Image (cartoon, rainbow, N blue to C red):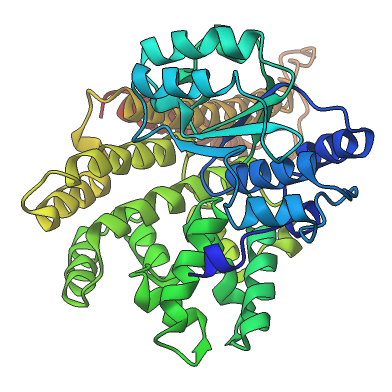
Amino acid sequence: MLHTKYRPKNFSEVYGQEQNLATLRKQVETRNYSSAYIFAGHRGTGKTSIARILARAMCCEHPTVDGPCNTCRNCRMILEEKTMDFIELDAASNNTIADIKELVASTTYLPAVLPKKIYIIDEVHNLSTNAFDALLKTIEEPPEHCVFILCTTELHKIPATIRSRCSNYKYSALTIDVISQRLSYVLNDIGKKYENEALELIAQQAEGSLRDALSICERLILTADVLTCAHVKEALFLIDDSIKLKVAECIINQDICAGIDYLQKIYEDGNNLSQLTETMIQCFTDCIVLKSIGNSDKDKKDNYHKQLLSVIQNTDISLIFWYTDQFCKLKETIRNTINPYMDVMLTLIKCCNPELLDEDKAYLLHRIYNLEKTVDILSKRLENITDKSEVTENTKKEPVSTPEEDDGFVETTSEEIPFCEGEEEGSSSKRSEESEESASNDIFSQLLESCFF
């Protein structure tokens, strides 16, 4: 098995966990070790492997900053499991108080061959409460010749009294780049050809676990001469980016017919609907991130993210949150359903018709958001019309003063008595006022419609 064959044997072969390794290297260099350690973190990140490396480094005759030499007598005895001074206990199957009492009793004896007696307890969180109580006193005041290394993926299950008496090291999930580098080294070593995109895809599916990535890789290389991205997607039943984009586009455009037809095609092609649900959750999560950061670093986005950004360009982020919530609920439902296709189709129809769910808080917030935008636009239009009407009134002609009478007769010219023009001016101003009043009425009617319909 690849994860067994390529298990690291010194610190230089460990990928990731640089901060923990820096501390442990310093302890090996100064020969100053703690009496008890807790290695806690994500699965497949090197907790047990580093515990074994540290155990050999403590007993090595010629240790270096990279850990044990793996060639001296003590290192070989531990590697070949030929000494009783190195004990590795699986707490998943040895978790009773009797098992721990037997282990504690063995600590009273001095090591027979190695400089120290080292106990590695894997999956220590599986110990019973009484077993932890039995171990507590020994952890608190261990003999000078004993060292305990406790490994766990669930630190919160270990009592605080145990945690406070140990040196705690937290192991984080490995990044895609780190896993890809290790996979590349392994495949080059066994002479297997591969595509870098395929390794990144495997690393994504491993979810931060190098052991899981090596297990997936081992299964895939048996059925392909060249490890390609298409082969990985086919073998792991992964959903292609084009399918995610198409489903998201149908939902955002509220195209029910196209969405149902495309779902039928996905189902007939043999795609896993549970995997589709996971994929859509990730897709809408990407939408939320893209909507939040906007067009920043646009040049750095790949083709998939650029297409996704164009699809959601005019969509409110609150509605995308609502879509994500619907598919998260579907993820919980689809696990125990007898007809996953029906559940996925109903969720798809629901997402294409958010207006049917007036009682949903997220959708109500979305409607309020749209209403506020509409009111703001109409208010600006109304202000513009009001300003125009004021300008029109201010530019109206001043009324002509009545000239003084002279013997009952007044001399006038044709320009001073524009009877037809006056009538036309009066009628045009009247029409202008009527059009402004009509525009105002239209705006108020639109405002009422947006509020109540």
